[in-house]
Length: 412
Ligand code: CTP
Image (cartoon, rainbow, N blue to C red; front, side, top):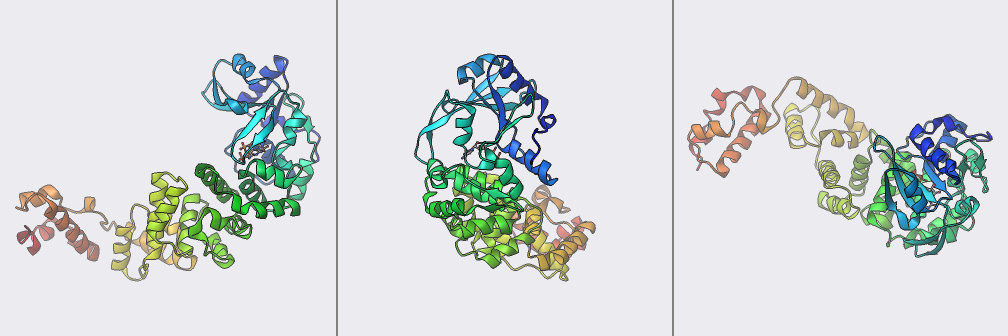
């Protein structure tokens, strides 16, 4: 972090080319934001950071000038000065004109262009996010000692924390995300502003809140990230369904396997005693996709029901058949003390090739019709009954056995 030159070799060539073009046209251009922060952190600690976001470019060029300099651009946030420049492969890279806030209501900001790099850095949220890198030389501008804070593992607002959070309440959640990273703490005044703002988050867009929740889960151990939301008084504000979680239950979430945010969200809801309906509504409220909301609902439902005894083969087959679609998610969220034995039992069932779904039955609907069952709901009912018999004993999955069941005759 103390190095005077940023390792610009790490910057993707497509981004570097955009910066060079801006500079070549006589403008200032600097790399800024999360990619700079994460690269400096990696360089200082040797710890890799999982990062999906690209390098952002801040420039003195006004937005219309940015648009005229590149063949393909998309004005993705033009009122805030952000233009996406498309590279050869169609990849989008954000270029934002130096700006300062003139008015904010905690959600939307009105900005003014024509300011210096220093002014632009001064309106950013945290010192660790207010470092600029020159694309040609790797020289760094770091007026708030963001590199020092990165090295010390400190999340500190640029200037007055309370003011920063009033400008944009999402910064409260961002502070918690950065503060939950391994080795980081939130500086006392910034922390005081976080806790003071905990009740002011209701106006934030739910998509943005969901995105921050997911980023937090990806950036830290769940016990630490969710634990920090809890400690800050934010957890119950965003997720009333999780209001009953205490530190001990949050700590247990570290037992969830893998780092999938959807599974973790489900495990948290289950730990808080939410039912599957409640969980689904909560997921929908925070604008999880339908698919993710379904996964959350299925995991919560499975965890709310009794789990089978791993020694009971029939019980394991029935349970697996009922939870087949979301089995992977469910298995990751199982209580740690139980998981290994149940997963082993499931693997054994699968290795034996036992049929688990209607599609795997030796007969299908047309066989039932040919055997004289009337078209209609009876077909599905009989097939489900057959599956139940086969789950009890897989050896029953033959046409001979299934097509001679007495309940075929009596079906209406
Ligand atoms: N920023 C800010 N206030 C916010 C959001 C962003 O001041 N509420 C500034 C920070 O300097 C931040 C930069 O804008 O580094 C880019 O923001 P964004 O891309 O949203 O986040 P990153 O910090 O890049 O981090 P990540 O991609 O990990 O979210």
